[in-house]
Image (cartoon, rainbow, N blue to C red; front, side, top):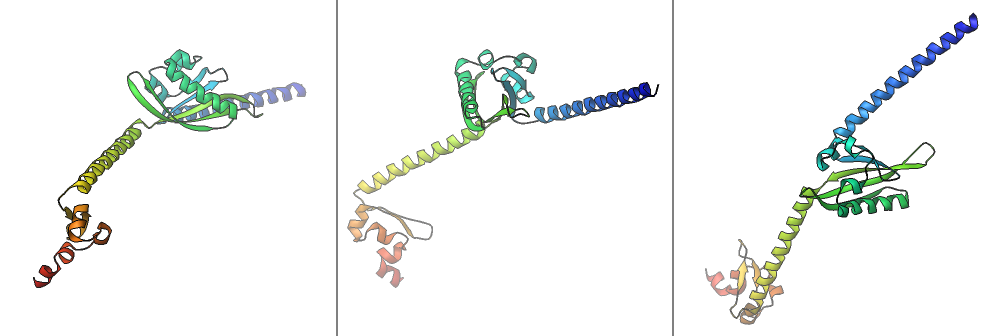
Length: 219
């Protein structure tokens, strides 16, 4: 009777521990899902065969597919061939090196141009065996568009400056430009020939003092 009582006590204790562990596991999973689904990045996990095992809400929103629809599918099932090849090639590199990799990925999907900053890394179990791959992808499309616009504006400005320099250098008339304080900032070859100064000698000098010294002093 004592043995049965002890067994009953042990069973109850084990049952309580299982229930507690299950509750903790559910709470942890709930927190994990909350973090995933409130991330501004798309997060997904694939198995070693490239089949989706998990995608978060951002992934669903970007690519118009639910997690249930994505589960078990590959990139070739969900994306156009060109886009799939980009993803698969980057994942191949991660699995060859067995280490994390950061990369920018540019592709078109559903009439939208994407530039993603993606971090991929292998997933390992407690024995350090790789069982899958995870990706965290952040949409930097707007930032890249701004950077490209700024670069284009800079290039346009350089071209305009180059054309202006060509005009100044080949003009037959002496051309001088000053800033708001009367200091010389442009002095073309015709001005060099007329006044007998090289441009490097006069830049930053006051025009009235340099070019019209007697008039400036008498005034």
